[in-house]
Length: 164
Image 1 (cartoon, helix red, strand yellow):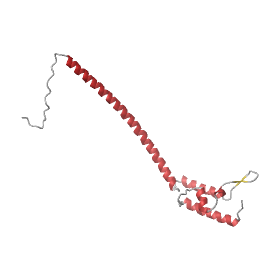
Image 2: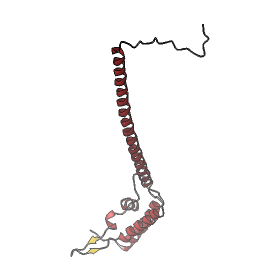
Image 3: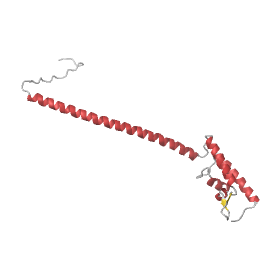
């Protein structure tokens, strides 16, 4: 791979710094994030310049723009620590995670309430069935006893209606 001259390197570093400033101000391109990939694309340099290189003997040497990548990541972390969210998608992800946690809590509470209501319904139905059986038993007992006379059911009197 060809080496770049000092003039090109200086120009590229200035472009990277300008692109980093734009990204950290929240001026993200469509579809871009506040990351090294977008930084490289905005500065017009290859992303590989941000990462360490290997010499032929296997030892590592810093990439030509690695110091700028580290500076960018430090500045981004400082902004995030200060509570400033540069990437609107990150804010959306944070909001959606909070909404998701809230909804999961609501589902858990509603599930517990439904379980409670089903248990209540089961208990109520069993009590109604027991009461029905008791009423049927009492009716049979009443029907089997010959010395009990059933009184006629009187029509209900409406207190708002005048007598005839």
